[in-house]
Image (cartoon, rainbow, N blue to C red; front, side):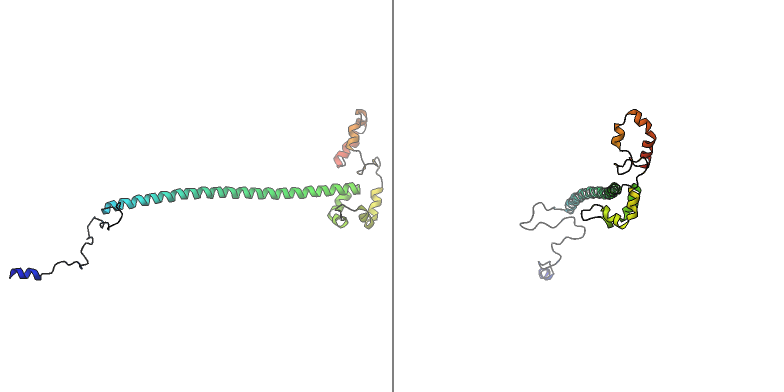
Length: 197
């Protein structure tokens, strides 16, 4: 009867869940399935080495990309600095253009009015007397302020009536003989100091 007892003892059946599953301490990876990849590692160590290699390659790609992004950020920073410098230069040029415009306006007023001090006083209000052509209208100005026209037309002693500033011109000084220049040197120096030349 001993034979009959062995037949009744339970054995592992194909439906048992533990059959073929890796057990604790097993260093082998599951065998590749039929039609699977032949380069699949056979052991856990091979799998870990392959994963480590893949992780290192991926990390190297990220480091390279990080360096590229840092270079791009530095380039963008440099471009921002250049843009800021250009904006500052543009502002300085705008200021210089405004100053040049004011000086041109004062020169025009001085030429039309014949007196630099009068031109300086009139300048803030010159737009009121500017014609459609953009030029200062002296007739309109003197119509409103006739007393200034009288003051303007009064010649100054020693003045050159042909010159709007009432003094010597640079051309006249250039044509003078050395003797004439020496005689009128004080007058010339005064004209230079007062800004009439």
